Image (cartoon, rainbow, N blue to C red; front, side, top):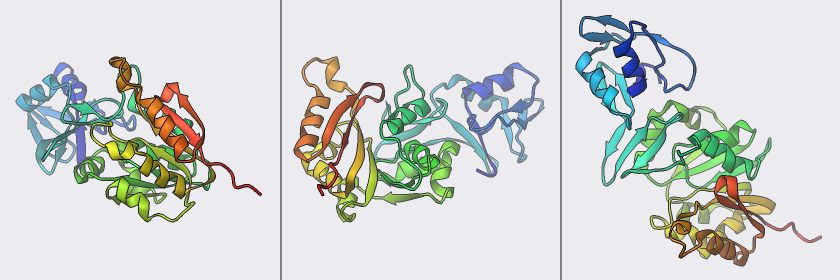
Length: 282
Protein backbone atom coordinates (compact mmCIF):
# COMPACT_ATOMS: atom_id res chain seq x y z
CA UNK A 1 0.00 0.00 0.00
CA UNK A 2 1.67 3.21 -1.13
CA UNK A 3 1.75 5.80 1.63
CA UNK A 4 0.46 3.34 4.27
CA UNK A 5 2.85 2.29 7.03
CA UNK A 6 1.96 -0.47 9.46
CA UNK A 7 3.02 -0.52 13.07
CA UNK A 8 2.39 -3.07 15.83
CA UNK A 9 3.57 -3.33 19.43
CA UNK A 10 6.84 -4.83 18.12
CA UNK A 11 7.84 -1.82 16.03
CA UNK A 12 6.54 0.63 18.65
CA UNK A 13 8.71 -0.95 21.35
CA UNK A 14 11.71 -0.90 19.07
CA UNK A 15 11.22 2.80 18.40
CA UNK A 16 10.93 3.55 22.10
CA UNK A 17 13.86 1.41 23.21
CA UNK A 18 16.51 2.22 20.64
CA UNK A 19 17.90 5.00 18.58
CA UNK A 20 17.81 2.75 15.51
CA UNK A 21 15.48 4.23 12.92
CA UNK A 22 15.33 1.39 10.39
CA UNK A 23 11.97 -0.23 11.08
CA UNK A 24 9.85 -2.72 9.12
CA UNK A 25 6.54 -1.04 8.27
CA UNK A 26 4.74 -3.69 6.16
CA UNK A 27 3.90 -6.32 8.81
CA UNK A 28 7.01 -8.29 7.78
CA UNK A 29 5.64 -9.07 4.35
CA UNK A 30 9.21 -8.26 3.22
CA UNK A 31 12.46 -7.60 5.08
CA UNK A 32 12.55 -3.98 3.94
CA UNK A 33 13.05 -1.27 6.56
CA UNK A 34 12.09 2.40 6.50
CA UNK A 35 13.77 5.34 8.19
CA UNK A 36 11.83 6.98 11.02
CA UNK A 37 13.35 10.17 12.42
CA UNK A 38 12.88 11.28 15.98
CA UNK A 39 12.58 14.90 17.00
CA UNK A 40 12.00 15.37 20.70
CA UNK A 41 8.77 13.55 21.57
CA UNK A 42 7.72 13.03 17.95
CA UNK A 43 8.46 10.29 15.42
CA UNK A 44 8.46 11.37 11.77
CA UNK A 45 7.31 8.69 9.30
CA UNK A 46 8.54 8.53 5.67
CA UNK A 47 5.56 10.53 4.36
CA UNK A 48 6.18 13.32 6.88
CA UNK A 49 3.46 12.26 9.34
CA UNK A 50 4.41 13.21 12.89
CA UNK A 51 3.33 10.75 15.58
CA UNK A 52 3.66 11.66 19.24
CA UNK A 53 5.54 9.50 21.72
CA UNK A 54 2.28 9.07 23.68
CA UNK A 55 0.64 7.37 20.67
CA UNK A 56 3.67 5.11 20.12
CA UNK A 57 3.59 4.16 23.82
CA UNK A 58 -0.11 3.30 23.54
CA UNK A 59 0.57 1.07 20.51
CA UNK A 60 3.48 -0.57 22.38
CA UNK A 61 1.04 -1.68 25.10
CA UNK A 62 -1.52 -3.14 22.66
CA UNK A 63 -0.32 -6.63 21.65
CA UNK A 64 -3.60 -7.57 19.94
CA UNK A 65 -4.01 -4.87 17.27
CA UNK A 66 -2.46 -3.57 14.06
CA UNK A 67 -2.16 0.18 13.42
CA UNK A 68 -1.33 2.08 10.27
CA UNK A 69 -0.12 5.57 9.45
CA UNK A 70 -1.76 7.23 6.46
CA UNK A 71 -2.46 10.79 5.29
CA UNK A 72 -1.11 12.35 8.46
CA UNK A 73 -3.08 10.17 10.91
CA UNK A 74 -2.72 6.96 12.91
CA UNK A 75 -5.54 4.41 12.67
CA UNK A 76 -6.35 1.00 14.11
CA UNK A 77 -6.94 -1.67 11.44
CA UNK A 78 -10.41 -2.38 12.79
CA UNK A 79 -14.03 -1.90 11.74
CA UNK A 80 -16.93 -1.58 14.16
CA UNK A 81 -20.24 -2.52 12.58
CA UNK A 82 -22.78 -5.19 13.42
CA UNK A 83 -19.69 -7.08 14.61
CA UNK A 84 -16.22 -5.90 15.63
CA UNK A 85 -13.52 -6.78 13.12
CA UNK A 86 -9.80 -6.24 13.44
CA UNK A 87 -6.43 -7.42 12.15
CA UNK A 88 -4.35 -9.23 14.78
CA UNK A 89 -0.54 -8.88 14.60
CA UNK A 90 0.35 -12.52 14.11
CA UNK A 91 2.81 -13.02 11.22
CA UNK A 92 1.07 -12.93 8.82
CA UNK A 93 -1.96 -11.22 10.42
CA UNK A 94 -5.17 -13.06 11.07
CA UNK A 95 -8.60 -11.48 11.37
CA UNK A 96 -10.62 -11.45 14.57
CA UNK A 97 -14.40 -11.08 14.57
CA UNK A 98 -15.98 -10.45 17.98
CA UNK A 99 -12.86 -11.88 19.61
CA UNK A 100 -12.79 -15.09 17.53
CA UNK A 101 -9.70 -15.61 15.38
CA UNK A 102 -10.25 -16.86 11.85
CA UNK A 103 -6.97 -18.82 11.66
CA UNK A 104 -5.28 -21.26 13.98
CA UNK A 105 -2.55 -19.36 15.82
CA UNK A 106 -1.49 -21.76 18.58
CA UNK A 107 1.54 -23.81 17.53
CA UNK A 108 1.10 -22.79 13.88
CA UNK A 109 1.07 -19.44 12.09
CA UNK A 110 -1.69 -18.51 9.60
CA UNK A 111 0.64 -19.15 6.62
CA UNK A 112 1.53 -22.68 7.77
CA UNK A 113 -2.15 -23.29 8.52
CA UNK A 114 -3.01 -22.18 4.97
CA UNK A 115 -0.32 -24.36 3.37
CA UNK A 116 -1.55 -27.42 5.29
CA UNK A 117 -5.02 -26.88 3.82
CA UNK A 118 -3.80 -26.27 0.25
CA UNK A 119 -1.37 -29.21 0.42
CA UNK A 120 -4.30 -31.52 1.16
CA UNK A 121 -5.53 -31.05 -2.46
CA UNK A 122 -2.35 -29.77 -4.21
CA UNK A 123 -3.68 -27.46 -6.96
CA UNK A 124 -1.65 -27.64 -10.16
CA UNK A 125 -0.67 -25.34 -12.99
CA UNK A 126 -3.69 -24.56 -15.17
CA UNK A 127 -6.33 -25.92 -12.78
CA UNK A 128 -9.36 -23.91 -11.63
CA UNK A 129 -9.92 -23.68 -7.88
CA UNK A 130 -13.00 -22.61 -5.94
CA UNK A 131 -12.20 -21.10 -2.53
CA UNK A 132 -15.61 -20.85 -0.89
CA UNK A 133 -14.80 -18.53 2.03
CA UNK A 134 -12.08 -15.97 1.30
CA UNK A 135 -11.33 -14.32 4.64
CA UNK A 136 -7.96 -12.58 4.21
CA UNK A 137 -7.41 -14.61 1.05
CA UNK A 138 -4.32 -16.56 2.07
CA UNK A 139 -5.77 -19.80 0.68
CA UNK A 140 -6.63 -18.19 -2.68
CA UNK A 141 -3.18 -16.58 -2.91
CA UNK A 142 -1.36 -19.82 -2.04
CA UNK A 143 -3.38 -21.77 -4.64
CA UNK A 144 -2.68 -19.12 -7.30
CA UNK A 145 1.06 -19.27 -6.54
CA UNK A 146 0.93 -22.91 -7.63
CA UNK A 147 -0.32 -21.88 -11.05
CA UNK A 148 -4.07 -22.28 -10.52
CA UNK A 149 -6.80 -19.79 -11.44
CA UNK A 150 -8.88 -19.12 -8.33
CA UNK A 151 -12.43 -17.91 -7.76
CA UNK A 152 -12.93 -16.91 -4.12
CA UNK A 153 -16.15 -15.87 -2.37
CA UNK A 154 -16.54 -13.57 0.64
CA UNK A 155 -19.89 -12.73 2.18
CA UNK A 156 -18.78 -9.94 4.53
CA UNK A 157 -17.84 -6.57 3.02
CA UNK A 158 -15.97 -5.64 6.21
CA UNK A 159 -13.69 -8.65 5.78
CA UNK A 160 -13.02 -7.55 2.18
CA UNK A 161 -12.16 -4.05 3.46
CA UNK A 162 -9.65 -5.44 5.99
CA UNK A 163 -8.16 -7.63 3.24
CA UNK A 164 -7.66 -4.47 1.16
CA UNK A 165 -5.75 -2.90 4.07
CA UNK A 166 -3.62 -5.97 4.86
CA UNK A 167 -0.37 -6.07 2.81
CA UNK A 168 -0.34 -9.89 2.99
CA UNK A 169 -3.64 -9.95 1.07
CA UNK A 170 -2.52 -7.65 -1.76
CA UNK A 171 -2.28 -10.38 -4.42
CA UNK A 172 -6.04 -10.91 -4.11
CA UNK A 173 -6.55 -7.62 -5.91
CA UNK A 174 -3.42 -7.31 -8.08
CA UNK A 175 -2.40 -10.78 -9.23
CA UNK A 176 -4.83 -11.27 -12.10
CA UNK A 177 -5.22 -15.00 -11.34
CA UNK A 178 -7.79 -14.50 -8.57
CA UNK A 179 -11.41 -13.40 -8.98
CA UNK A 180 -13.10 -12.11 -5.80
CA UNK A 181 -16.90 -12.46 -5.60
CA UNK A 182 -18.80 -10.61 -2.85
CA UNK A 183 -21.71 -12.84 -1.93
CA UNK A 184 -23.01 -15.74 0.17
CA UNK A 185 -21.27 -18.97 -0.90
CA UNK A 186 -24.51 -20.91 -0.36
CA UNK A 187 -26.20 -18.81 -3.07
CA UNK A 188 -23.19 -18.07 -5.32
CA UNK A 189 -22.24 -21.73 -5.82
CA UNK A 190 -25.74 -22.50 -7.20
CA UNK A 191 -24.97 -20.18 -10.15
CA UNK A 192 -21.84 -22.01 -11.31
CA UNK A 193 -22.09 -24.46 -14.19
CA UNK A 194 -21.75 -28.20 -13.67
CA UNK A 195 -18.17 -29.49 -13.56
CA UNK A 196 -16.51 -26.03 -13.43
CA UNK A 197 -13.70 -26.70 -10.92
CA UNK A 198 -10.75 -29.07 -10.56
CA UNK A 199 -10.35 -28.33 -6.86
CA UNK A 200 -12.57 -26.95 -4.09
CA UNK A 201 -11.20 -25.63 -0.81
CA UNK A 202 -14.06 -25.21 1.65
CA UNK A 203 -13.02 -23.41 4.85
CA UNK A 204 -16.29 -22.14 6.33
CA UNK A 205 -16.88 -20.24 9.57
CA UNK A 206 -17.67 -22.42 12.57
CA UNK A 207 -20.84 -24.52 12.39
CA UNK A 208 -22.75 -22.31 14.86
CA UNK A 209 -22.27 -19.30 12.53
CA UNK A 210 -22.81 -20.95 9.12
CA UNK A 211 -24.60 -24.25 9.57
CA UNK A 212 -25.95 -24.22 5.99
CA UNK A 213 -22.36 -24.50 4.67
CA UNK A 214 -22.12 -27.89 6.42
CA UNK A 215 -25.39 -29.20 5.00
CA UNK A 216 -25.85 -32.12 2.63
CA UNK A 217 -27.73 -29.74 0.32
CA UNK A 218 -24.61 -27.53 0.01
CA UNK A 219 -22.31 -30.54 -0.38
CA UNK A 220 -24.45 -31.71 -3.32
CA UNK A 221 -23.86 -28.32 -4.96
CA UNK A 222 -20.11 -28.63 -4.39
CA UNK A 223 -20.25 -32.12 -5.91
CA UNK A 224 -22.15 -30.80 -8.94
CA UNK A 225 -19.67 -28.01 -9.74
CA UNK A 226 -16.61 -30.23 -9.28
CA UNK A 227 -15.18 -31.99 -12.34
CA UNK A 228 -15.05 -35.80 -12.36
CA UNK A 229 -11.89 -36.77 -10.49
CA UNK A 230 -11.83 -33.35 -8.80
CA UNK A 231 -10.58 -32.93 -5.23
CA UNK A 232 -12.22 -31.31 -2.21
CA UNK A 233 -10.67 -30.17 1.06
CA UNK A 234 -13.10 -29.24 3.83
CA UNK A 235 -11.75 -27.57 6.97
CA UNK A 236 -13.77 -28.67 9.97
CA UNK A 237 -11.62 -28.15 13.06
CA UNK A 238 -12.63 -30.34 15.96
CA UNK A 239 -14.82 -28.28 18.29
CA UNK A 240 -16.86 -31.26 19.48
CA UNK A 241 -13.85 -33.20 20.72
CA UNK A 242 -13.42 -30.72 23.57
CA UNK A 243 -16.77 -31.76 25.02
CA UNK A 244 -16.60 -35.42 23.93
CA UNK A 245 -20.25 -35.24 22.90
CA UNK A 246 -20.15 -34.75 19.18
CA UNK A 247 -17.68 -35.50 16.41
CA UNK A 248 -18.42 -32.83 13.82
CA UNK A 249 -15.93 -34.37 11.40
CA UNK A 250 -17.76 -37.69 11.39
CA UNK A 251 -21.06 -35.98 10.52
CA UNK A 252 -19.36 -34.01 7.74
CA UNK A 253 -17.84 -37.21 6.30
CA UNK A 254 -21.20 -39.01 6.33
CA UNK A 255 -22.94 -36.14 4.53
CA UNK A 256 -20.15 -35.86 1.95
CA UNK A 257 -20.54 -39.58 1.15
CA UNK A 258 -24.29 -39.20 0.83
CA UNK A 259 -23.71 -36.29 -1.57
CA UNK A 260 -21.67 -38.64 -3.81
CA UNK A 261 -18.06 -38.04 -2.75
CA UNK A 262 -15.64 -40.96 -2.46
CA UNK A 263 -12.23 -41.37 -0.81
CA UNK A 264 -13.49 -39.37 2.16
CA UNK A 265 -10.84 -39.28 4.89
CA UNK A 266 -9.47 -37.08 7.63
CA UNK A 267 -6.35 -34.95 7.23
CA UNK A 268 -5.18 -34.48 10.80
CA UNK A 269 -2.47 -31.85 10.18
CA UNK A 270 -5.02 -29.59 8.46
CA UNK A 271 -7.89 -30.41 10.87
CA UNK A 272 -10.12 -31.29 7.96
CA UNK A 273 -11.39 -33.85 5.49
CA UNK A 274 -10.47 -34.64 1.88
CA UNK A 275 -12.75 -36.24 -0.70
CA UNK A 276 -13.02 -36.57 -4.46
CA UNK A 277 -15.65 -36.86 -7.15
CA UNK A 278 -15.54 -40.22 -8.96
CA UNK A 279 -14.21 -40.31 -12.50
CA UNK A 280 -16.86 -40.85 -15.19
CA UNK A 281 -17.29 -44.49 -16.20
CA UNK A 282 -16.23 -45.16 -19.75
